[in-house]
Amino acid sequence: MQPFWPHFHQLQNSGTPFCCVTLVDSLGSAPADRGAKMLATCEGLVAGTVGGGKIEAWALLEACEMLAKSVSEPVFVQWNLQTELGMTCGGAVKLFFEPFNIARWPIVIFGAGHVAQALVPVLLPLDCRLTCLDTRAEWLDRLPKAPQLRAELSTDLAAEVANLAPNSFVLLMTMGHATDLPVLRELLERPFPYVGVIGSKSKAGALRNTLNREGFSAEDCGRFFCPVGLPIGSNHTHEIAISIAAQLLQVRDSQR
Image (cartoon, rainbow, N blue to C red):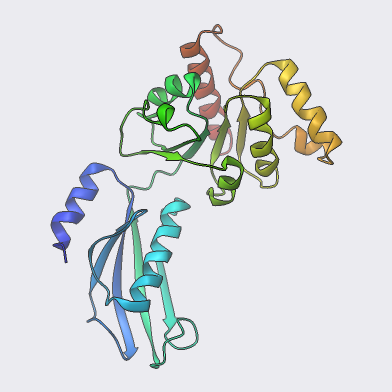
């Protein structure tokens, strides 16, 4: 097993979101001593252990779910080994989950095209956690590398909506109307604090007409910004990116 504290400091300094899990107490059969610790990122176990087996597997799932939802506050759990984890031995464990490097402002960008390429560098210096999803690996590869940016290749963008944290600010800038619409349908099924769709006023009208015919209410159709961004600057890609970043900040601050 990898040494714990060197990995803890490495993760903390890198800015990578991670969770430290501590075995606080146990009743009955326990696979590890009190105070046992492990580190987990979204990709899984990094170092340490809380005993292996089902307890550790459940702890990893809990930690990964917290990180995926950008939970920033510590969580204390108590699990019954028999009734909750399905273990034959009786007893219980108490675990403390402590997340680190969690940005309080998750921003998700669907599409890694030209505007996303200009927007991501504008957003990276802010206290946010960026996720960019696309079906095209070559566009994702062009994005800058940064600890707070996750570039994800997807085969079904609409299905990714179910995995988003409820406080996500979501931008939709895929290849066009046909690829935006399936994602937008899913986004409008959940009360995200911000949804922005890149496009002209005519595209906005077409999207809203289609959604209205499909049964979405006028209120639903008014819950997304399109055209996206503040009405400043020109149609130059980098100025569009700045106008979008400005709108994100404006909406974020209005909701505080």
